[in-house]
Length: 187
Image 1 (tube, rainbow, N blue to C red):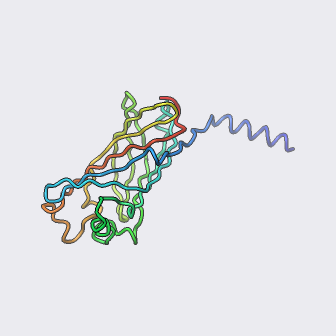
Image 2: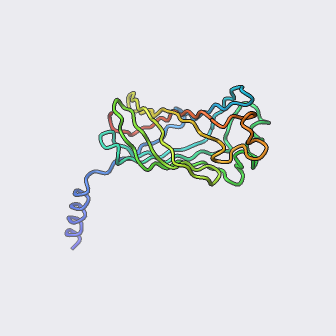
């Protein structure tokens, strides 16, 4: 009986085809940064702690999945007083809502190692559909996924209340990322 069960499991697993392996994020080679504008002056920042989960086969991108979590309390602007201000409720409210999250819903190849990753971005409990253009590059066993998009902070109530005045802080925030993974199939 055990042999019959093993044979049935082998047939079922084989019929499903090989599973796409999950890639491992290499945090030391990855970065997530942003540029906002305060009274017209660019303000650069980055997040020090985030993680990503990627299941992706370049030959079948539509079957891929990516999820991404950002610890909002890990924001770094190079000024402790600004970082403590961002933790407050009008901004990230990171004590109450510590994570921002992205979950893909579709990955579409555009050619030339370019992909559009559609999904839902959630910040401060508010979710919006976004499409993020991503370019992949490989060097040895490391695959870098890089790209960027414009986030409209007021759609997520970031800088709420008196900070909603876009003459003080611009609504558009340029987000850039470079995520390095180990374990992605050859492009």
